Image (tube, rainbow, N blue to C red; front, side, top):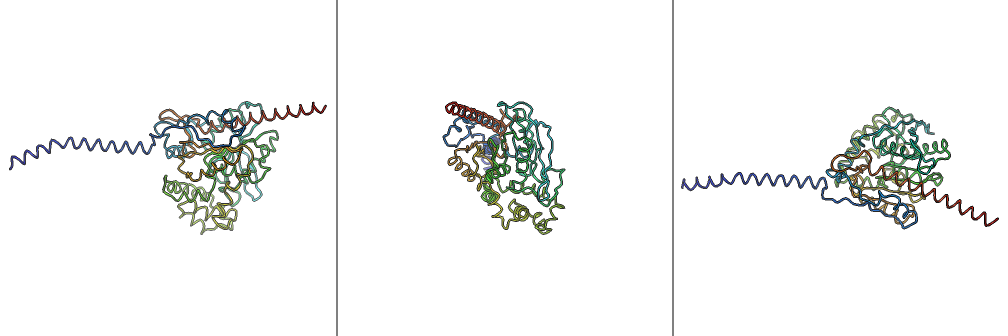
Length: 428
């Protein structure tokens, strides 16, 4: 019996190394599987999905904008993960960021607030020879000093565009509020004041309206609020906005794609920003210590909006605030060429929200909707394997689309002059 037991132990002992090797291989395989899934490495690169009506303008744009008809290729190792694209944008904005030199302008508002924007002159002549100004509205709590804005402005300047960048009210770290009010999701007052200043200062300029994320909502809402707001406007480009605040905030409470976590992080950033202006905001009769105490306990943007943000403009409920501030109720009034850009793997914008730009592009001849497979929220980094390029797909697409619109308008004006000339000669 002892001999048999010893024999079994020896056999079992000889099998142990093989078992451990198998366990190691299984563990490595499991880790690789998780990495491949998390980084979405098996997802193929793709041409952006373009939705638009078949019009002479849309055909011209697709022919003149090769970026919209060729594959968007993100960095191989991490670029197919919407989370990593979003995280990199959120952490550093862009790589090798330039520092364009601009002039800060101060605009007193009727309610005592002081709006500011930075003005950057063009660094070269535009390809059409015209004077064109990009009026830019950044994302939530952002301003002209953010790296992604600096990168885009520098690139646009070199292509012959003057740039005016709104600094959201209360966003600049060294700028105190002069009234008990901050920027909100859809308040267009400051953006409108900046556009009006540009029109007065440069009466011959043509305008290109650009909005990023929350800024896209403000830009589209501004144009749709009043027909006169579209005067001198060549086109509008909106990137990574959610279109409907009410529907967007409902999805922010879900754990799908970690949106609840993103909601918590964004709420933390907003709390810090609001509390940094605590002294100015407490002078408002609508906001008191109780509201600020609720703010400190808030874990979502909805709670912050309900306790603080809606009260800046006297909304009676959160629902009313979201309904009135969302561009989805105004964008159908926009008649200038409108490019809406979103990414399928944007963790902040739920796919259900993309039905809005799809519907707009299908029903409105001036709207084009570009949906990329990858890019995250405001990422759109390009690169070969690991390191991204300084310029992103987003930067290049906006300028390429705008160039095409400028040349289209130039041709239309030339055709109009020719028709008028022929009409005059026939009358003679």
